[in-house]
Length: 283
Image (cartoon, rainbow, N blue to C red; front, side):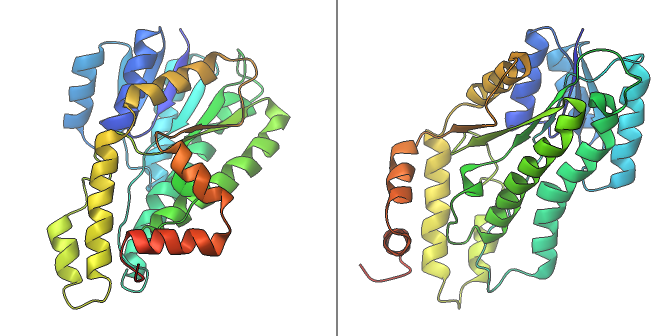
C-alpha cells in the first residue's frame, strides 16, 4: 500500500484529498491540530488514515511526525507529500501588524518548508529506502499570480510558494522527486469564511479603506459560494500521484475567463478595473 502525507487534513481541501486517496487504496498520514480533529477524520476514513497531531509552524513538531511516519514505512519511500495547510490573513497593508504578516508566512511558507525538509528523506532523498521516489504537491492559489486589494499578505505567501516550488523541483531532480503545484481559484471551503468580518470592519471604522474592505469581504463570500468543489482538487491530486509525467502546474479556476481577460490587459488598465470594482477609485 502506497503512503502519502497530507497537511491540513482536518477540513476543507485537505480532508477531501485524504478521503479521495483512501478510497483509491492509499494509506494517508494526515496532519491535524488536535486529537479531537484527528479522531473525527479517522472515524470517517477508517484504518487507512493515521492522524498526525502537529502544527506546521513548529519545526520540532513536524520532525517528530516525520519520525512517526518513518517507523510505519518499514524502509519504503513515501509516495507523496501534499502541502495543503494554509490560512488567509485579510486587511490593508497599511494597517496589518508585523505579527499578522509573520503568522501568514509562518503557516503558508515556513510550514511548507518545515514539512518538505522533514519528509524529504522519506520521499527519496535517502537512497537506502526502497520503492519509487515520491512526489510533492504544493497547494498554491491563483492568488500566487494575481495581487488583489486587502489580500497582500496572502498574495505574498502564495507568490513565495510558487517560487519555492520551482526552485525545489529543479533541486530534487537529483533524487527523482517531482514537485507539482495545484493553483485553485475560488473553492467551496471556509478559508475566507474564517475571517471575523465584524471585528475586521470594526478595526477600520475610521479608515478610508472601510468601504472597499466591506466590498471585498462580500466578494470573497460570494466567490466561495460559486467556487469549485474540493473533490475537483482531490481528483487532480490523485491524477498527479498516478501520472508518470504530470505537468508542473495545474490551474483550477471557475473564473478563468475573467482572470485571463484581466491578465491580457495592460497592467494599469487592470489596476483601474479592479480598484473601481471595490470602490478604491471613482467609477
